[in-house]
Image 1 (cartoon, rainbow, N blue to C red):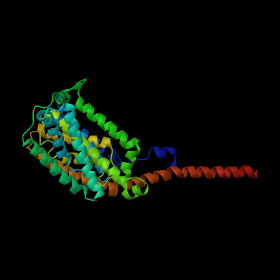
Image 2 (cartoon, rainbow, N blue to C red; image 1 turned 90 degrees about the vertical axis):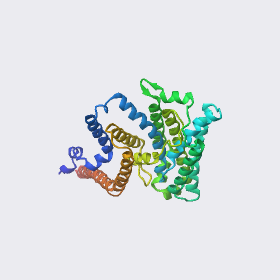
Image 3 (cartoon, rainbow, N blue to C red; image 1 turned 30 degrees about the vertical axis):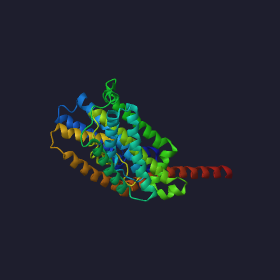
Image 4 (cartoon, rainbow, N blue to C red; image 1 turned 135 degrees about the horizontal axis):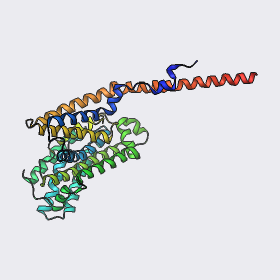
Length: 362
């Protein structure tokens, strides 16, 4: 007798849990609701100029956030990214203006400086077993202090014409900065999802001991993750200089909190081993829309810092809840579904065996 519980139709009509829907599409739903609400509160919000500005600023943050995501995936954290942005900004502009270096060379030095900070962070974290929080807090102070000493606290202007042109260029009405950020995001996605290095990133963050026992050189993976973070922070510094039209020692102030919030909101676990580039982009976009809404609604200054702090706490809470409650529940549901699919197959095998025996007896 057929069991209706395990019929093909019942399997197709099995309800999807609210938790599963929110886990997959919750962030996108929040963004869409926010867009609808703000379009009613501000006539300026739903305009091409405003959306271009939102995506432009989000692109600057996204580049740095993607680097931060690599570090969080291996179970680390990089608080120095905002200060590295400032170092990159002042070096790229200052070396060209003060020493007459070609733009390409000053940009190269800025990128190498960011990469060096990333290497130092990774090396000290892995080889001396110092907490990444402590190491990057120290390099944050060093980098920010260097930027202010180099500039004397003043902005360096004008920027090289090549940087200015890059900051203002557009293709089919889309700023090149946005296109560049999307290219970096695509490359990061391919690296994490299609390469052995990407799989090693997730393995090291998910279970460092198991990764080491399986032959993965965990220390090297962690160092490379920090190097990527430092390099992309330096790229972000160049992009911000192109937007501001100056090299600034205060560039990137507080950016480390923003990118951490964006990455965690996007689903990357603070414990490592879990996260996707698309989620990070959505997290950046959400924070960008929040910042834009604060500006359009004329909310008092520095409220965005409070919002970022609240968002980080909430995101951390959601991350803990997801790991301790939601993910085990979804895993149990998946096992139940697998069992439900396997049961009718077993029944069919039994019926086939009985028929075979009947034919043999005849």
